[in-house]
Amino acid sequence: MPLLDHALYAFVIMHGFWVSPWMMIIIALGAAYLSGRAMELIPFTRRIIERREAREAERG
Image 1 (cartoon, rainbow, N blue to C red):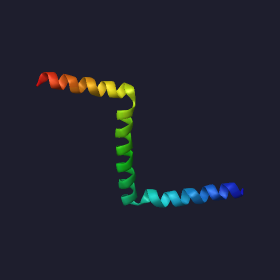
Image 2 (image 1 turned 30 degrees about the vertical axis):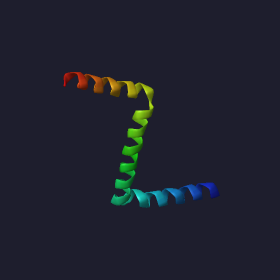
Image 3 (image 1 turned 135 degrees about the vertical axis):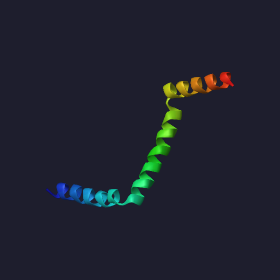
Image 4 (image 1 turned 180 degrees about the vertical axis):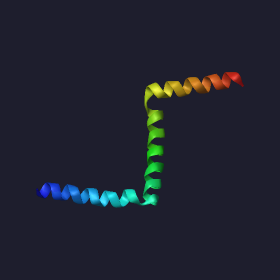
């Protein structure tokens, strides 16, 4: 049971972060940044982005 007590305390602390609108904004901005970086690093998505950019460059 002591392990469960520590886990519950962690959830209570995290609940305090999730209730705050400022913390939600910070977490959302961080997630958006990290997902953008992940899109650039994954080869499959990088090829899709390069194809789109090439099509836009051909159009003018």
